[in-house]
Amino acid sequence: MPSEDGSEKDAERGTVPESTDLRQVLLEFTFLATAAIFIGFFGQNTPLMSVLIGLNLITRFLLIRRRYDWVFFLIGFVLGGGNDLASMARDVYRYTPPTLLPVPIPFWMLVFWGQIFVAFRQLFQLPVFQSKPVRGNPWRPDLRLVVDVSVFVILRVMIYFFVKQEPLPTIIFAAVVLLRLIVIPPRKSEWLLIAVCVVLGLTYEAVLIALGLYVYYDPVFLGMPAWLMIYWVFMIPIFAKGIFDRLEVTLARRAAVVAAGG
Image (cartoon, rainbow, N blue to C red; front, side, top):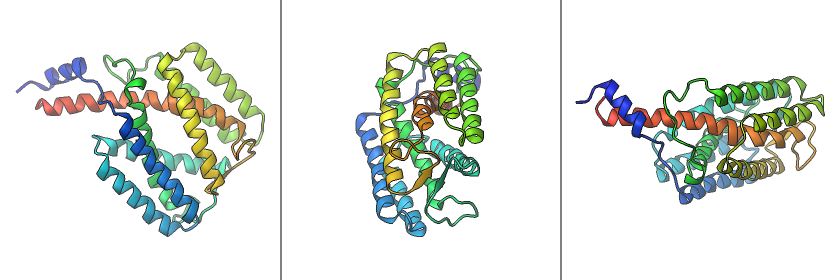
């Protein structure tokens, strides 16, 4: 049986995250579209929505059996809910349905956040969006990780504390994101992912807003504030993709070690 160190070195040299395919991605986003339909008809009925979203998620996991999806689901459950709490505490947006929780978040939204994270995981793993294999420790604080975490913190602080002082948030968002694109210019595949995420993200946001799920402060287009449109350029296709890629490598190497008996 190979040693643990030997197994880890073999995993690092030869293991890359598993790719997905367009069929799986389309199926994944079909479940998100189904959730939007439920919101349109039953969005204000939190108990019923909790059941429907739960069934939607269970069906998704039965039909799409992808290793470690549960990890990304839990991350979305925790971070999505945490972002909701912080955003509503700062009046960035507010949900309109009643809640079953001691905080103004519909109970089912916590589950739905997990499903959203899993859906983007699938999108990121399309071969056309695959990044170069990570060598060494994927969590080593290289230039990209340091810059992207710094940009993320700056944008969150700006929106939490200055959301009601437009146009300051929009100007800062535009300047910071533009600087990030200059410091680390995206590759062609990254530009493509940015375009796809901006279109999909803003369209889905606009639909959910139109269905009455939540309301943003100071909207300027289809219920969305100006800074949000800039935020979508960075948050999902750059920041989340970069973090997901590192996590994918970590999980793939761990799976290789386990498979080798390490």
